[in-house]
Length: 121
Image 1 (cartoon, rainbow, N blue to C red):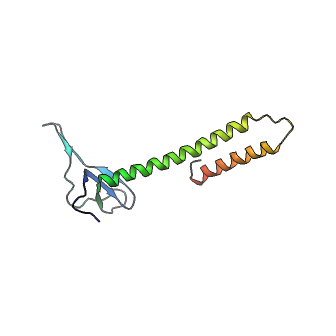
Image 2: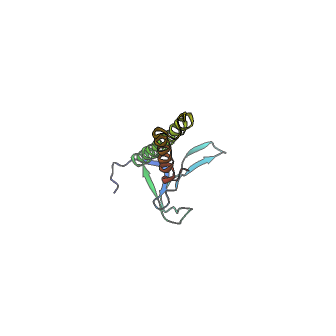
Image 3: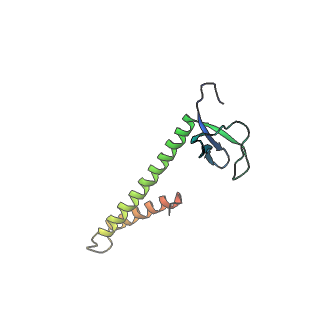
């Protein structure tokens, strides 16, 4: 899996089971030393007791990119829901429940369902 060209984040370890990640740092007030701790040897996850492993810069960047994409999708769902609610609230009924009003209600419900599917509401 790893090659000689892998560049690891100094002091950063991750659990594959629960996705816990931690930075092991050194801070000595007496001499002012600050830096990453040596991560050689076996380290255990505080959540589930499985082994922690070193993480490459590329892997960490990919994790952040995936998290960004997920948050962007969530923001889009919330935006669609807000627009649908706004249009529904501003709709003038005029001659009662028209087809247009029913379409707006359907759009609002669809946006709400999309948010519920992702457990955001």
